[in-house]
Image 1 (cartoon, helix red, strand yellow):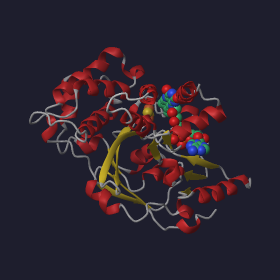
Image 2 (cartoon, rainbow, N blue to C red):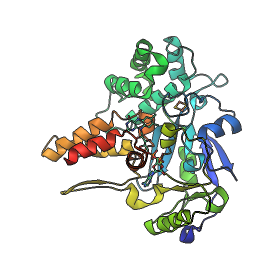
Image 3 (cartoon, rainbow, N blue to C red):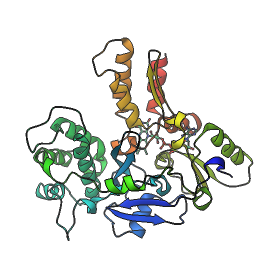
Image 4 (cartoon, rainbow, N blue to C red):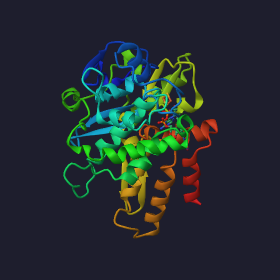
Length: 359
Ligand SMILES: Cc1cc2nc3c(=O)[nH]c(=O)nc-3n(C[C@H](O)[C@H](O)[C@H](O)COP(=O)(O)OP(=O)(O)OC[C@H]3O[C@@H](n4cnc5c(N)ncnc54)[C@H](O)[C@@H]3O)c2cc1C
Ligand code: FES
């Protein structure tokens, strides 16, 4: 199974809470959570449901985008995120915000002060969701708030947070506590908002982030032709279990217990990650995440509804926002969702809304 022209010798390198990790060999089915809990001192992220539902394993993933010269920070469920998929990224866990040795972060203190944590098992994940909301609010282009205040609006904070946290875990009343916590947190703009790893991310972003496929059994085709030849190998039927993957969140729904031998990561094929808008409509690549699709659809009608299409885009975005939680939307792809609906009879909301639009 050749990676042809893109054959590379890169190791799997990433950072956790500012500490650099280089993993020379690992089974490709290893999840980020398994690695964190068994190979690092950072045990804050927990395994609870293991299917992307509860948020106990949520961490912040930061990724440098060399084209835009910016760092994207977003939450992911580490129980579903495959370790090989975070090559070149930086991870922040609750210990990265603060700890007993260096002092707690104000988010930790507010959770504790408002008795918002109940048993505390999934609190580390909630802290990371709150941290992500505050970090990303700073990137929004809107008028500067009064000195010391965050750009995050309380209404957005409440909406975002409720979407991130599992009602099944907490019950309804305590869910409102972190929102109150957030109201108290909006003054924290001055400190505590810098995720780890910006320097790491810029230094580690090499000319290519493609992994050495023979060492990790992780393939990153960069063209449709390469993907075709890799898939041809799969069809040879030599007994090797190969999985095409984007966010790997489908594993949460199907609870796959058997590991795959090899993975083909679709995220490096430009055609599959493109979002293109023109006067004929909007095209969204199959590997685009639900979050990015929502963002793009909303951008279409930022200046108000000029056409019927603008209204339709807004409706699709509104519907997509109801799909799963924020940390799943951040890694789940549209293509993955539709393939699950097509092949596995998954009751997909996205397929439903797209079919409705087409009618
Ligand atoms: C907790 C949770 C809640 C969810 N809630 C909802 C919900 O409310 N509504 C809803 O509609 N969905 C929901 N989903 C489903 C979610 O949207 C899908 O899991 C996700 O979109 C799949 O994308 P992925 O990139 O993670 O796919 P992966 O897990 O990487 O792949 C899923 C499957 O599709 C195949 N595949 C992926 N991309 C392609 C491609 N481009 N071409 C061919 N095959 C491909 C893979 O081989 C695999 O078999 C939920 C999922 C979870 C885990
Ligand atoms: S353990 Fe529940 S979402 Fe990961």
